[in-house]
Length: 359
Image (cartoon, rainbow, N blue to C red; front, side, top):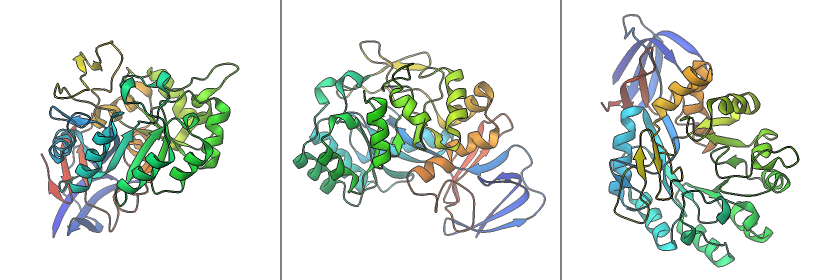
């Protein structure tokens, strides 16, 4: 048995003082009052990133391998991410199948599923995704996708207006988690998809129909619904004032992602880093250089979100989005012992995965 003692602990629901956390078999076995622990900063649950494309120079869209998944964990655990969905850019079918196989075969830490961002996009909202890889759905392709992803937690970003009603029902009746994104859906189309059961929206404000005076678009549909909505708080993808407004309107249904990419020239996707942003050859904003650590810092320091709520946006809410809150996303009895020690200025000091120190 291992024990960690901290002066301050944020469980995800409350702040506790002078806490001893006992760990057995990688899980929390007890929470008890005990003085004499670490008195600088605080402990919270490990961060969860539901959209990250790679790390360590291995972009999963170019290298659909277990090594690329491991490199992503190795890089992002250093800034507090203990769990993640490896994400594939809009890609050919063969790359999708390799991504699924690699995700199923991965034996390392942290992976909670695969995020397929595409290929069923509206081409005019593809962003930095390659138009040649955008595909139209059809029943055979969808059945094959459902079969291929069997037993693998899979999160799929789609443009619902590109689907016939029966095709959309094929996916909705499958275990695949659907999210609206890279879409030009009207407000009415987006609301219809949400009401039908697609209760997730990918990277608010980016690659979607916008909120206008007489056409509210997907942005407006998000604001007028309880759909879980991700947002990239890097100051590049949307202004911090936009994040502030979104938080007021979405409340606990807004959660953080990084959308982070990495420098990798080995395949069809190549993004250049200039300062704190990545762009493609056309200068289009392409993923991010964000970390979950920085996203939380930005929420608190730039947006003015209270610390406990910013932490929930990186832990509790993403765990709930993918139906994993029973095991990750907060600190409690029986949950995985995955923690982050943050300093008072919100810098990562140490990370534990199943009770094992990672830094």
